[in-house]
Length: 298
Image (tube, rainbow, N blue to C red; front, top):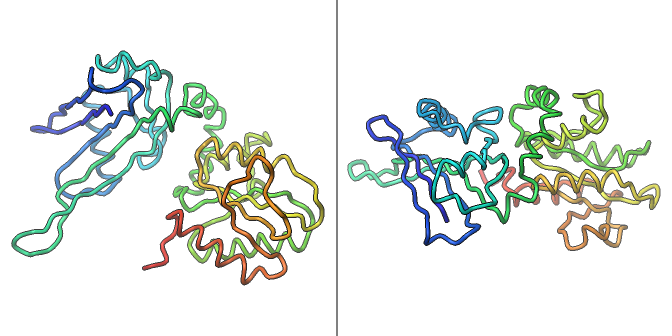
């Protein structure tokens, strides 16, 4: 692994580099920024951004908001460091969400745990990131930039948002399923959104893509309540969100023997539409816990 570590010395930014002949080709790159003492995620990102500007470092910058995705210009990154010249996968641009860590130590005087270091991490892994992360992806997102900005104004914390994917029919049972899901989500301070809740774009597909990019995770419902009709729109939306590496909750009506062929092998949450109170709330809550979207232990 290549390591690029930004450190402050006398308030000047220094870069420690580990890489070269001893690192195999197509290795991941770990970008670090460390500050002593305790900082919130927003505070350390703000400091990092400030020092990048002071030192005219342009290959990494926030995409929209500090706490969310950042853009990394891979082509420019490669040109900045000699030891990365051989890495031909560094081409185009990607977006990465920074990871946030704090290190604790026991204070000898008070015998209490205190935070002595705060760290940001950006990991570029060609085996995980480049299926959908490229220069084309940045350009593709740009056509919904305005609608996505409107969405983020309505929902600044996207980790609270889920996009609902299902075939919509004029059915009381379907309405009950959606209503029960919304009740479960509201209990945990989450919001379940449909693409027709609000039109952020006049273009139908752009509006749907705005929801898919804006929401942190998705909920896909597969059922045969009124008919066995297969709705290709649901699979299209599921595939799009899978390409974005969004967490996906698959809800399967227990009268279905299995999910569609392309989704065989995926873990799913089963429900009984005739007994939603017992089967839906518990199962969906466990899924949310397992994916660390909620924490009910507190």
